[in-house]
Image 1 (cartoon, protein in one colour):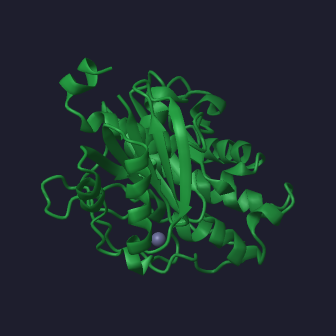
Image 2 (cartoon, rainbow, N blue to C red; image 1 turned 90 degrees about the vertical axis):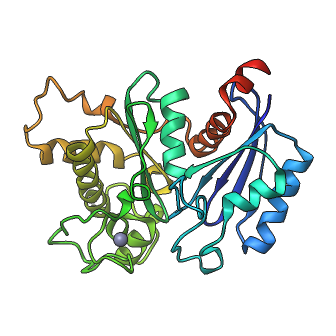
Length: 298
Ligand code: ZN
């Protein structure tokens, strides 16, 4: 049994082939161009590397309402060529395989619960902080969907009064998490990418201020047992301790210390990063097969 996985990102498409135990056997990536250029290349890859099922961890927003005729279609993305593109149907039609699909961050949360930092926990929230900000949630045995899927990058935050940026960079909201804390927000605020700021630059305190608000909002709304933070911005090692510190300050003793784990054990780097999304896609492929097939042909 082999599982195919696609992590569909805004800049690149990563393809992977996994064995029955979700160990990565092969991996390749291609740049994300238009669907007309990119999809045939992905389909060719899996024709050359045959698999039994395919999982897709996709950038959003995406229609994840299983009863909808547009299930698996990309929605209102700023990547215009991909708007309304039927990603799931095109791959399923091109390969003739059972396919599963979810957001990249939901897939990453699934991977971390099944095989990574959150093994054994009943819930896990996965944030990515990079070109965009997104969050995926696994709780009570499943990934969370609703009207569509969570869009945690666009929760509204309080602006810091000393923030040089008056409005965040999100074209939809002046004060959302993505607008204030994404990589492009740091660039807009300081005129250089975050990676060019010194580790003791006050920009990191400001960044932690926004990301801590995001964590506290999530903590109060969905009460996850663990919060994982990945993505390019989180590569800065000084950031995570600052976030933990500010989360404690913002919670301000409201949650009983007996209920809240030590921050080092609660807000962490993902264990499978940078492959959390790809591993999650392989797990979606496995879920797309009927249970009897999964077990029989191992
Ligand atoms: Zn926004």
